[in-house]
Image (cartoon, rainbow, N blue to C red; front, side):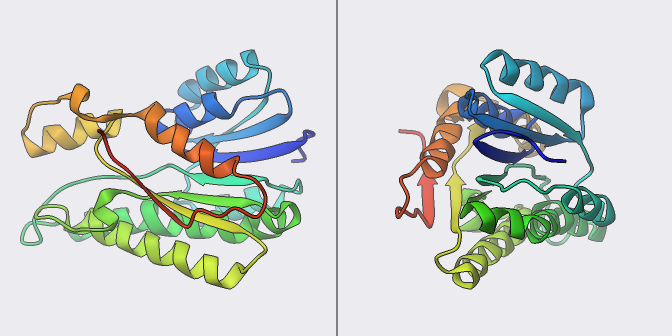
Length: 234
């Protein structure tokens, strides 16, 4: 796969929430956006939005936890990658007493292993563009709370991945972790249902709020790096 554009940006979790909002805000005629997700119909809608804004869109329906499928995808991708935005994720709550081992494994596969595998495969493409890697983390990646053990553990691990990559790639890549607070997304609807609390979107960040922070990082001038960025509602 060789998108022809001035900039190529890969976005996971692009079918909804923060990934969708990021795709909309990054759409520009000079860009190819590679939109990754598991829901082909939803990706199709985002693709049409991106193309209506003048960008080129490449829709990739892929289960990011399928390591071999991700490796096949990255092996076929030979364009320089200006930015890789890891927005896909899983949030499921439960106390340590009641956590199912399968839930712990799922968090690690989706929130940690999938970004690692995709980043590994695209490292040559990112280096070719002196690109930017953005890991959408969470406030839970900075502080764990009761009932959030599996999710927080995966986000702490994701922070470690980002920190290690930043050290390893030196001045070849920019690497940012973004830590949003509660955000009005479909994932948050599910989280509040698990918590048994009211859904209060007016008290949360919007997906666009977080996406604007991602755009700020991706579009920062050469020589400017933002290692960590926390985003909270005012």
